[in-house]
Length: 113
Length: 263
Image (cartoon, rainbow over all chains, first blue to last red):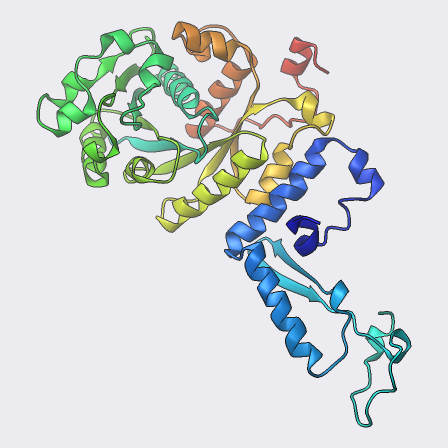
Protein backbone atom coordinates (compact mmCIF):
# COMPACT_ATOMS: atom_id res chain seq x y z
CA UNK A 1 0.00 0.00 0.00
CA UNK A 2 1.51 3.29 -1.10
CA UNK A 3 1.76 6.52 0.82
CA UNK A 4 -1.02 7.92 -1.29
CA UNK A 5 -3.60 5.41 -0.11
CA UNK A 6 -2.31 5.35 3.44
CA UNK A 7 -2.44 9.04 4.11
CA UNK A 8 -4.76 10.52 1.59
CA UNK A 9 -7.34 7.79 2.06
CA UNK A 10 -8.57 8.44 -1.39
CA UNK A 11 -11.76 6.49 -1.68
CA UNK A 12 -12.27 7.62 -5.27
CA UNK A 13 -9.01 6.18 -6.41
CA UNK A 14 -10.13 2.61 -6.77
CA UNK A 15 -13.77 3.16 -7.59
CA UNK A 16 -14.54 1.90 -11.05
CA UNK A 17 -16.17 4.94 -12.72
CA UNK A 18 -13.15 7.06 -11.90
CA UNK A 19 -10.67 4.37 -12.84
CA UNK A 20 -12.25 4.06 -16.25
CA UNK A 21 -11.98 7.76 -16.96
CA UNK A 22 -8.91 9.19 -18.68
CA UNK A 23 -5.62 9.78 -16.96
CA UNK A 24 -6.54 13.42 -16.36
CA UNK A 25 -8.54 12.26 -13.36
CA UNK A 26 -5.47 10.64 -11.87
CA UNK A 27 -3.44 13.74 -12.75
CA UNK A 28 -5.91 15.94 -10.84
CA UNK A 29 -5.81 13.71 -7.77
CA UNK A 30 -2.03 13.44 -7.75
CA UNK A 31 -1.70 17.16 -8.26
CA UNK A 32 -4.03 17.99 -5.39
CA UNK A 33 -2.14 15.57 -3.19
CA UNK A 34 1.33 16.95 -3.89
CA UNK A 35 0.22 20.57 -3.73
CA UNK A 36 -1.52 20.26 -0.41
CA UNK A 37 1.61 18.64 1.05
CA UNK A 38 3.98 21.10 -0.65
CA UNK A 39 2.03 24.07 0.65
CA UNK A 40 1.59 22.77 4.17
CA UNK A 41 5.25 21.70 4.23
CA UNK A 42 4.17 18.51 6.00
CA UNK A 43 5.62 15.37 4.49
CA UNK A 44 3.74 12.07 4.45
CA UNK A 45 6.42 10.78 6.87
CA UNK A 46 5.65 13.56 9.37
CA UNK A 47 1.96 12.86 8.98
CA UNK A 48 2.59 9.19 9.78
CA UNK A 49 4.38 10.17 12.99
CA UNK A 50 1.53 12.50 13.98
CA UNK A 51 -0.91 9.70 13.33
CA UNK A 52 1.03 7.35 15.64
CA UNK A 53 1.12 10.05 18.31
CA UNK A 54 -2.62 10.68 18.12
CA UNK A 55 -3.37 6.96 18.32
CA UNK A 56 -1.10 6.59 21.35
CA UNK A 57 -2.65 9.55 23.19
CA UNK A 58 -6.25 8.56 22.50
CA UNK A 59 -5.67 4.89 23.29
CA UNK A 60 -4.78 5.82 26.85
CA UNK A 61 -8.36 7.03 27.42
CA UNK A 62 -10.62 5.42 24.85
CA UNK A 63 -10.81 2.38 22.62
CA UNK A 64 -10.25 3.27 19.03
CA UNK A 65 -10.09 1.27 15.84
CA UNK A 66 -6.40 1.83 15.15
CA UNK A 67 -6.48 0.14 11.76
CA UNK A 68 -9.00 2.57 10.36
CA UNK A 69 -7.69 5.88 11.60
CA UNK A 70 -7.31 8.17 8.59
CA UNK A 71 -5.64 11.53 8.21
CA UNK A 72 -6.05 13.87 5.32
CA UNK A 73 -4.76 17.32 4.50
CA UNK A 74 -7.45 19.26 2.70
CA UNK A 75 -7.29 22.62 1.12
CA UNK A 76 -9.82 25.23 0.24
CA UNK A 77 -9.13 28.62 -1.31
CA UNK A 78 -6.69 29.91 1.33
CA UNK A 79 -7.03 27.47 4.20
CA UNK A 80 -5.40 24.13 4.82
CA UNK A 81 -6.74 21.75 7.41
CA UNK A 82 -5.78 18.40 8.78
CA UNK A 83 -8.82 16.16 9.02
CA UNK A 84 -8.44 13.15 11.28
CA UNK A 85 -11.07 10.44 11.31
CA UNK A 86 -10.94 8.09 14.29
CA UNK A 87 -13.47 5.27 14.50
CA UNK A 88 -14.28 4.34 18.09
CA UNK A 89 -14.67 0.76 19.17
CA UNK A 90 -17.83 -0.10 21.09
CA UNK A 91 -18.39 -3.10 23.34
CA UNK A 92 -19.96 -4.95 20.42
CA UNK A 93 -16.73 -4.60 18.47
CA UNK A 94 -14.68 -6.14 21.22
CA UNK A 95 -14.60 -9.59 22.61
CA UNK A 96 -13.44 -8.09 25.82
CA UNK A 97 -14.98 -7.75 29.25
CA UNK A 98 -17.34 -4.84 29.70
CA UNK A 99 -15.88 -1.42 30.10
CA UNK A 100 -14.83 -0.15 33.45
CA UNK A 101 -17.39 1.53 35.62
CA UNK A 102 -17.46 5.25 35.07
CA UNK A 103 -15.93 5.18 31.59
CA UNK A 104 -17.34 7.87 29.33
CA UNK A 105 -20.42 7.07 27.28
CA UNK A 106 -19.96 7.01 23.63
CA UNK A 107 -21.48 10.03 21.94
CA UNK A 108 -24.52 9.23 19.82
CA UNK A 109 -22.86 10.48 16.67
CA UNK A 110 -20.26 7.73 16.77
CA UNK A 111 -22.74 4.85 16.92
CA UNK A 112 -22.13 3.99 13.32
CA UNK A 113 -18.47 3.22 13.82
CA UNK B 1 7.88 57.43 -20.59
CA UNK B 2 8.80 54.38 -18.56
CA UNK B 3 8.77 50.76 -19.61
CA UNK B 4 6.91 47.94 -17.92
CA UNK B 5 9.23 45.08 -17.05
CA UNK B 6 7.59 41.67 -17.53
CA UNK B 7 9.41 38.57 -16.35
CA UNK B 8 8.49 35.25 -17.95
CA UNK B 9 9.27 32.33 -15.69
CA UNK B 10 8.09 28.79 -14.87
CA UNK B 11 10.14 26.84 -12.36
CA UNK B 12 10.22 23.80 -14.57
CA UNK B 13 12.39 23.81 -17.67
CA UNK B 14 11.23 23.08 -21.18
CA UNK B 15 7.70 24.42 -20.83
CA UNK B 16 8.13 27.21 -23.38
CA UNK B 17 9.45 30.29 -21.58
CA UNK B 18 11.84 31.31 -24.33
CA UNK B 19 9.34 30.69 -27.12
CA UNK B 20 6.77 32.71 -25.17
CA UNK B 21 9.19 35.58 -24.55
CA UNK B 22 10.20 35.75 -28.21
CA UNK B 23 6.65 35.64 -29.53
CA UNK B 24 5.22 38.10 -27.01
CA UNK B 25 8.10 40.51 -27.63
CA UNK B 26 7.50 40.43 -31.36
CA UNK B 27 3.71 40.63 -30.97
CA UNK B 28 4.01 43.70 -28.72
CA UNK B 29 6.37 45.34 -31.21
CA UNK B 30 3.90 44.56 -34.01
CA UNK B 31 1.38 46.59 -31.99
CA UNK B 32 3.73 49.54 -32.39
CA UNK B 33 5.47 49.25 -29.02
CA UNK B 34 9.17 49.70 -28.33
CA UNK B 35 10.29 46.41 -26.86
CA UNK B 36 13.43 44.76 -25.50
CA UNK B 37 13.55 41.01 -25.01
CA UNK B 38 16.21 40.32 -22.40
CA UNK B 39 17.79 36.89 -22.02
CA UNK B 40 18.06 36.15 -18.29
CA UNK B 41 19.62 32.71 -18.70
CA UNK B 42 23.35 33.37 -18.28
CA UNK B 43 25.38 30.40 -19.50
CA UNK B 44 22.47 28.73 -21.29
CA UNK B 45 21.22 31.47 -23.54
CA UNK B 46 18.68 30.51 -26.16
CA UNK B 47 16.54 33.54 -26.80
CA UNK B 48 18.96 34.57 -29.56
CA UNK B 49 18.47 31.20 -31.29
CA UNK B 50 14.68 31.21 -31.02
CA UNK B 51 14.64 34.81 -32.34
CA UNK B 52 17.06 33.91 -35.14
CA UNK B 53 19.47 36.66 -34.09
CA UNK B 54 22.40 34.54 -32.92
CA UNK B 55 24.71 35.72 -35.71
CA UNK B 56 24.22 39.38 -34.89
CA UNK B 57 25.50 39.38 -31.32
CA UNK B 58 28.64 41.41 -30.65
CA UNK B 59 28.32 42.39 -26.98
CA UNK B 60 26.04 41.08 -24.26
CA UNK B 61 24.60 42.35 -20.99
CA UNK B 62 27.54 40.96 -19.01
CA UNK B 63 29.91 42.99 -21.19
CA UNK B 64 27.86 46.06 -20.29
CA UNK B 65 27.75 45.29 -16.57
CA UNK B 66 31.51 44.74 -16.54
CA UNK B 67 32.16 47.96 -18.41
CA UNK B 68 33.29 46.65 -21.80
CA UNK B 69 30.55 48.37 -23.81
CA UNK B 70 27.67 50.78 -23.62
CA UNK B 71 24.19 49.31 -23.17
CA UNK B 72 23.15 50.42 -26.66
CA UNK B 73 26.00 48.42 -28.14
CA UNK B 74 24.70 45.23 -26.55
CA UNK B 75 21.21 45.66 -28.02
CA UNK B 76 20.56 43.75 -31.25
CA UNK B 77 17.87 45.30 -33.44
CA UNK B 78 15.33 42.93 -34.96
CA UNK B 79 14.59 44.54 -38.31
CA UNK B 80 11.82 42.12 -39.24
CA UNK B 81 9.37 44.13 -37.16
CA UNK B 82 8.65 47.46 -38.76
CA UNK B 83 5.67 48.66 -36.74
CA UNK B 84 7.37 49.31 -33.41
CA UNK B 85 10.93 48.70 -32.31
CA UNK B 86 12.30 45.38 -31.18
CA UNK B 87 15.68 44.66 -29.66
CA UNK B 88 17.30 41.59 -28.15
CA UNK B 89 19.52 42.06 -25.12
CA UNK B 90 21.58 38.88 -25.11
CA UNK B 91 23.43 37.44 -22.16
CA UNK B 92 26.76 35.63 -21.99
CA UNK B 93 26.95 32.00 -22.99
CA UNK B 94 30.28 31.22 -21.34
CA UNK B 95 29.62 32.63 -17.88
CA UNK B 96 27.44 31.53 -14.97
CA UNK B 97 24.56 33.02 -13.01
CA UNK B 98 26.88 34.85 -10.59
CA UNK B 99 28.10 37.06 -13.46
CA UNK B 100 25.19 39.40 -12.72
CA UNK B 101 23.26 40.09 -9.52
CA UNK B 102 19.70 41.30 -8.83
CA UNK B 103 20.86 44.88 -8.18
CA UNK B 104 22.61 44.99 -11.57
CA UNK B 105 19.52 43.53 -13.25
CA UNK B 106 17.47 46.38 -11.79
CA UNK B 107 20.09 48.88 -12.92
CA UNK B 108 20.10 47.54 -16.50
CA UNK B 109 16.31 47.62 -16.68
CA UNK B 110 16.14 51.12 -15.21
CA UNK B 111 18.55 52.22 -17.90
CA UNK B 112 16.30 50.70 -20.58
CA UNK B 113 13.02 51.94 -19.11
CA UNK B 114 13.59 55.47 -20.40
CA UNK B 115 13.63 54.45 -24.02
CA UNK B 116 11.19 51.55 -24.24
CA UNK B 117 7.60 50.54 -23.51
CA UNK B 118 8.16 46.91 -22.57
CA UNK B 119 11.10 44.88 -21.32
CA UNK B 120 10.48 41.15 -21.39
CA UNK B 121 12.89 39.05 -19.33
CA UNK B 122 13.29 35.38 -20.23
CA UNK B 123 13.96 33.78 -16.84
CA UNK B 124 16.01 30.62 -16.53
CA UNK B 125 14.35 27.50 -15.15
CA UNK B 126 14.74 26.81 -11.45
CA UNK B 127 14.33 28.94 -8.36
CA UNK B 128 17.97 29.81 -7.74
CA UNK B 129 19.95 32.92 -8.50
CA UNK B 130 19.05 33.15 -12.18
CA UNK B 131 15.37 33.21 -11.24
CA UNK B 132 16.01 35.73 -8.46
CA UNK B 133 17.90 37.90 -10.96
CA UNK B 134 15.04 37.77 -13.45
CA UNK B 135 12.48 38.56 -10.77
CA UNK B 136 14.26 41.56 -9.22
CA UNK B 137 13.34 44.21 -11.82
CA UNK B 138 9.87 42.79 -12.62
CA UNK B 139 6.71 44.89 -12.58
CA UNK B 140 4.64 41.93 -13.76
CA UNK B 141 5.35 38.22 -13.78
CA UNK B 142 3.99 35.64 -16.19
CA UNK B 143 4.29 31.98 -15.25
CA UNK B 144 4.36 29.59 -18.20
CA UNK B 145 3.20 26.06 -17.53
CA UNK B 146 2.07 22.94 -19.38
CA UNK B 147 -1.06 20.97 -18.49
CA UNK B 148 0.99 18.35 -16.73
CA UNK B 149 1.35 17.46 -13.03
CA UNK B 150 5.05 18.26 -12.59
CA UNK B 151 4.77 21.57 -14.42
CA UNK B 152 1.73 22.69 -12.40
CA UNK B 153 3.42 21.69 -9.17
CA UNK B 154 6.53 23.73 -10.02
CA UNK B 155 4.35 26.65 -11.07
CA UNK B 156 2.66 26.56 -7.67
CA UNK B 157 6.03 26.80 -5.95
CA UNK B 158 7.15 29.64 -8.18
CA UNK B 159 3.89 31.55 -7.68
CA UNK B 160 4.49 31.33 -3.93
CA UNK B 161 8.03 32.68 -4.31
CA UNK B 162 6.81 35.51 -6.54
CA UNK B 163 4.24 36.51 -3.93
CA UNK B 164 6.82 36.25 -1.15
CA UNK B 165 9.01 38.73 -3.08
CA UNK B 166 6.09 41.14 -3.38
CA UNK B 167 5.99 40.66 -7.15
CA UNK B 168 2.55 39.08 -7.31
CA UNK B 169 -0.01 38.35 -8.33
CA UNK B 170 1.51 36.36 -11.16
CA UNK B 171 -0.53 35.49 -14.23
CA UNK B 172 -0.51 32.15 -16.00
CA UNK B 173 0.15 31.18 -19.57
CA UNK B 174 -1.04 27.62 -20.16
CA UNK B 175 1.18 26.43 -22.98
CA UNK B 176 0.90 23.36 -25.23
CA UNK B 177 -2.72 22.64 -24.44
CA UNK B 178 -4.34 19.96 -26.61
CA UNK B 179 -8.10 20.59 -26.34
CA UNK B 180 -9.08 17.30 -27.92
CA UNK B 181 -7.04 15.47 -25.27
CA UNK B 182 -8.69 17.56 -22.56
CA UNK B 183 -12.08 16.55 -23.94
CA UNK B 184 -11.04 12.91 -23.83
CA UNK B 185 -9.99 13.40 -20.19
CA UNK B 186 -6.40 12.65 -21.11
CA UNK B 187 -5.06 16.05 -20.13
CA UNK B 188 -5.59 18.52 -17.29
CA UNK B 189 -7.91 21.30 -18.35
CA UNK B 190 -7.32 25.01 -17.83
CA UNK B 191 -10.12 24.88 -15.29
CA UNK B 192 -8.30 22.11 -13.36
CA UNK B 193 -5.15 24.23 -13.30
CA UNK B 194 -6.94 27.39 -12.22
CA UNK B 195 -8.82 25.58 -9.48
CA UNK B 196 -5.62 24.31 -7.85
CA UNK B 197 -3.45 27.38 -8.43
CA UNK B 198 -6.10 30.08 -7.82
CA UNK B 199 -4.20 32.30 -10.25
CA UNK B 200 -5.48 34.30 -13.18
CA UNK B 201 -4.84 32.97 -16.69
CA UNK B 202 -3.72 35.55 -19.23
CA UNK B 203 -3.36 33.15 -22.14
CA UNK B 204 -3.90 29.65 -23.42
CA UNK B 205 -1.50 28.54 -26.13
CA UNK B 206 -2.48 25.39 -27.98
CA UNK B 207 -0.03 22.71 -28.99
CA UNK B 208 1.14 23.73 -32.44
CA UNK B 209 3.43 21.90 -34.83
CA UNK B 210 4.51 25.22 -36.28
CA UNK B 211 6.48 26.02 -33.10
CA UNK B 212 9.20 23.46 -33.83
CA UNK B 213 9.82 24.57 -37.39
CA UNK B 214 9.74 28.20 -36.23
CA UNK B 215 12.46 27.39 -33.72
CA UNK B 216 14.40 25.43 -36.35
CA UNK B 217 14.35 28.45 -38.64
CA UNK B 218 14.69 31.19 -36.03
CA UNK B 219 11.44 32.77 -37.21
CA UNK B 220 8.94 32.89 -34.31
CA UNK B 221 5.38 31.96 -35.29
CA UNK B 222 3.88 35.40 -34.70
CA UNK B 223 6.04 36.81 -37.51
CA UNK B 224 4.31 35.00 -40.30
CA UNK B 225 1.05 33.28 -40.61
CA UNK B 226 -1.88 32.65 -38.37
CA UNK B 227 -1.13 29.33 -36.74
CA UNK B 228 -3.09 28.53 -33.54
CA UNK B 229 -0.15 29.37 -31.28
CA UNK B 230 0.58 32.60 -33.17
CA UNK B 231 -3.00 33.73 -32.69
CA UNK B 232 -2.79 32.90 -28.98
CA UNK B 233 0.42 34.93 -28.57
CA UNK B 234 -1.12 37.91 -30.39
CA UNK B 235 -4.10 37.68 -28.03
CA UNK B 236 -1.85 37.63 -24.95
CA UNK B 237 0.03 40.68 -26.26
CA UNK B 238 -3.29 42.51 -26.62
CA UNK B 239 -4.30 41.53 -23.08
CA UNK B 240 -0.95 42.82 -21.79
CA UNK B 241 -1.81 46.11 -23.48
CA UNK B 242 -5.11 46.19 -21.61
CA UNK B 243 -7.44 45.08 -24.39
CA UNK B 244 -10.34 42.83 -23.53
CA UNK B 245 -9.73 39.69 -25.55
CA UNK B 246 -11.87 36.75 -24.44
CA UNK B 247 -9.99 33.63 -23.41
CA UNK B 248 -10.72 30.60 -25.56
CA UNK B 249 -12.49 27.94 -23.54
CA UNK B 250 -10.31 24.89 -24.11
CA UNK B 251 -13.15 22.40 -24.08
CA UNK B 252 -15.34 24.26 -26.48
CA UNK B 253 -14.96 23.89 -30.20
CA UNK B 254 -13.21 27.00 -31.38
CA UNK B 255 -12.26 28.25 -34.78
CA UNK B 256 -8.77 26.91 -34.63
CA UNK B 257 -9.93 23.45 -33.62
CA UNK B 258 -12.20 23.38 -36.64
CA UNK B 259 -9.28 24.65 -38.67
CA UNK B 260 -7.20 21.69 -37.53
CA UNK B 261 -10.09 19.28 -37.89
CA UNK B 262 -9.74 18.22 -34.28
CA UNK B 263 -13.31 18.64 -33.16
